[in-house]
Length: 273
Ligand SMILES: C=C(O[C@@H]1C=C(C(=O)O)C=C[C@H]1O)C(=O)O
Image (cartoon, rainbow, N blue to C red; front, side, top):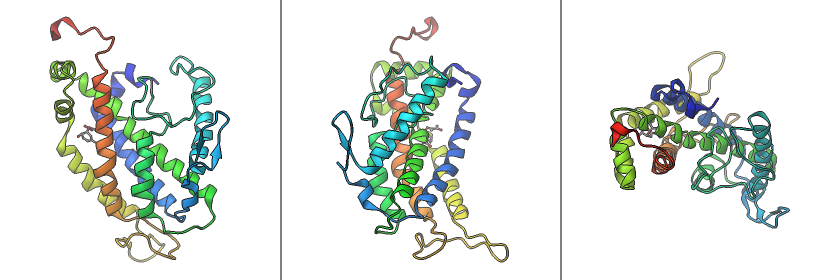
């Protein structure tokens, strides 16, 4: 489905529902990653050498191989939507200057997302150390990064939906023409939605992080990584902080970047001038 050509799918309420479901995906992906130790050696740069001479960490190698498979599948299933040519550009870690054709369902992982994830998140949810489960932790990292990337790149659809709002379009066009990043950011920001999201996220993280047994009380864990616990759950604060400092701001960056190129090659309707 090409969301950008599908009016109904672009309703802001429906897009926000997708973001709400992705909250669950992200929380569970983090809980899965927290089952393994930090395994710092999987993040050491330069361990793997690619055919084109570039090099990367074990995790980057893992992502690189996964993305090659996904890109091949995408090309096979939807050749018109993905104007990639073979072979794919390497290495497969794009920067925030994503191409306009980038589809939020793709799993290309933005470098920014990767860096913040490795620096800010993994050390907070995993026990320090090495448990030798490198493949397992890299698989979980990939799942976290894919979910985060998808969530953040959904900003493109959200932005398109806001741009298509007839009550807002004139203002967006003017601000885009003036290349006024700050004003675009202000216009697309909805503080009520953000505050509600953070409240909901805290509740979800507490509930999903609970130990639920066949009998007795549901015990929510506020204490975070529980050493030696059979179910290492994550702290609600870590998830809320992740969204507040990283997921929401990057989503909005993607929205602004998308809008700044929105008028390129587009005929502004007569009555909007
Ligand atoms: C995604 C949206 O745009 C902005 C970003 C938000 C987010 O990343 O959760 C929430 C509200 C808006 O400030 C939206 O309006 O839903």
